[in-house]
Image 1 (cartoon, protein in one colour):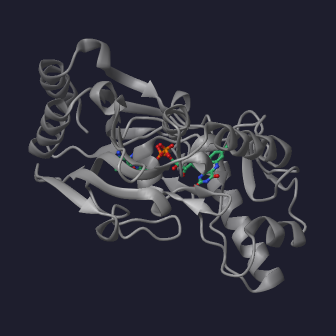
Image 2 (spheres, helix red, strand yellow):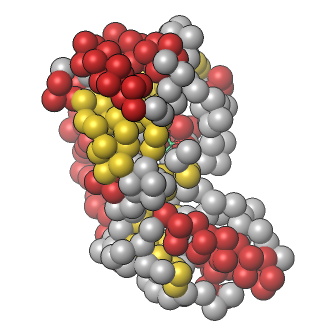
Length: 311
Ligand SMILES: Cc1cc2nc3c(=O)[nH]c(=O)nc-3n(C[C@H](O)[C@H](O)[C@H](O)COP(=O)(O)OP(=O)(O)OC[C@H]3O[C@@H](n4cnc5c(N)ncnc54)[C@H](O)[C@@H]3O)c2cc1C
C-alpha cells in the first residue's frame, strides 16, 4: 500500500468508525494466541453491520486487502505484518439471544460472530441447554469456530448448529442452513471464500445444569493435564490424519522438543508447536515444514497444517 493510500484510508475509516476503533500499525502479536506477528497497517473494530459493509466497500473501492480476525487462536500472522485492513467484530457482534420452545424443550440460541465460544457455552449452561459443552475450552470466537467447524472431545459445531448468516463481498446478506454451511473436519463453505460470518444459531435441548457443568469442568481438567497451555500456541498445529493422530506421529518421529529458532514442538503434547518466547512466524513456518518432512520420512503420512497463515 502506498503512503498516500494510508492517509486517504485513515480519513475514510475515521468517517465510518468511532476513532477508538481505528488503529494504525497495530502489532498483530497482541492479537494472536501465538503472540507472533508484525504490524497491521490498519486494525479496525466493526461494531455493527453497517460499519462492516462500509469498511468492505472502502477496501474494495481503494483496492486494499482485508482480513477478518476472530480471536486469533488459529492464525499465524506474518513477521512483516499485514499491508491492509485487519477487521475484528465487536459491539453488536458480541450479542446473544434465545428463543425457547416450551412445547418441545428446545431453544434456538443465536450469537454474533464476535462472541467467544467459551461465553456461548457458559450462556447455554446458564439457560439450561445442552450441546455446547465441548466449546467451553476452545479459545476462539464463534466466527472462527464456524469457519473452522471447531470441535473437541467427539463433538463439533456441526453437531448443534442450525444456521448462520454471512455477508458476501458484494454486500449481500445470506442465511445458510446447516447443510449449506458444508461443515467438515476443520472446514466449512467459508474456507477460501471472502464471505464474512455474522452470526450462528444453535438448536439445543433443555437439560439439567449440573451434568452440563460437570462435563465442562471435566473437559477443562483434561486440557490442563494434556495441553501446553502455559506457552503461546495456536492449539493443534496439524489436522488429524485419517485413522491416526498427528501428535502420535510427531512423537514417533522423535520430534518432541525439536526447535527452530524460538518455535518448538511441545514436550507436553507433540501436536502443538509453541512459542518459547521469541519465535517468529518464519521459525514456526520452517518448523511446520520440517515436521511434515520428518513425519513423512518416518511414517509415510504427510501432515496438513490446521493453522491458517495470514496472507
Ligand atoms: C490452546 C488452544 C486450544 C485449542 N483447542 C482447540 C480445540 O479443542 N478444537 C478446535 O477445533 N480448535 C482449537 N483451537 C484452535 C482455535 O481456537 C479454533 O480453530 C477456533 O475456532 C479459531 O477461532 P478464532 O476466533 O480464534 O479464529 P481466528 O484464529 O481469528 O481465525 C481462524 C480463521 O477463521 C477466519 N474467521 C474468523 N472469524 C471469521 C468471520 N467472522 N468470518 C469469516 N472468517 C472468519 C479467519 O479469517 C481465519 O482464516 C485451539 C487453540 C488454542 C490456542
